[in-house]
Length: 276
Ligand SMILES: [Zn+2]
Image (cartoon, rainbow, N blue to C red):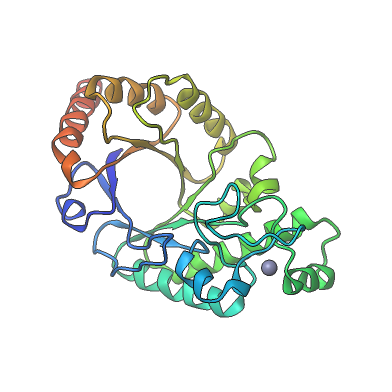
């Protein structure tokens, strides 16, 4: 499966490739109506606008640092995943997107291994059946994902942070692919790079994720950047990745339509020739 991923609604409607991913939600907090027949993103907890408006809703680490765009290692604001009002509105957005198409969950998980230590999270962990905070965080994210998948009529894809080192996703974000696979239809891993002057790391990470999801009932899709990359390089890179994944999608701007079509045509021709 080859497709594109874009924030441009006009390009998303063009039907380039087998499947289109559309950024309906942005981590800035901007929300747009989901488009029919595509995979619409729902930003679970990445929401700079809400964090700006209500700083105490941001996730907080053990040292008291809030998950804001200004915090080191953060590029947007992240709401605490146990904020029940916010959780409810996120599930409403999943339901709305899932009523017209498929859904991709982005910013799924806690925003780092020492989040969240707000008073509510400390209390909920203490009251939980878990002795280990990583286990508790993983249960929080898995429970949310299960409910989100129930809310959506369409398929649900979970975005994974690009770190397939064993156990790393649980420790970083509370993401457990084996547990999530009981609820979602697939995983999407962004492996974006400017220009891809080197590509060995892309193949290595794709291979690592193939191992991580091996035997699970969920597909694996890898997201590559298209903008500013030579077509020959993109085709070669996609062929390296497709050995380990069920699908490849190319992040594209409006101006990348011709490039995307060229690359997808060349990849499609090869796929057709293999089939015949
Ligand atoms: Zn919290």
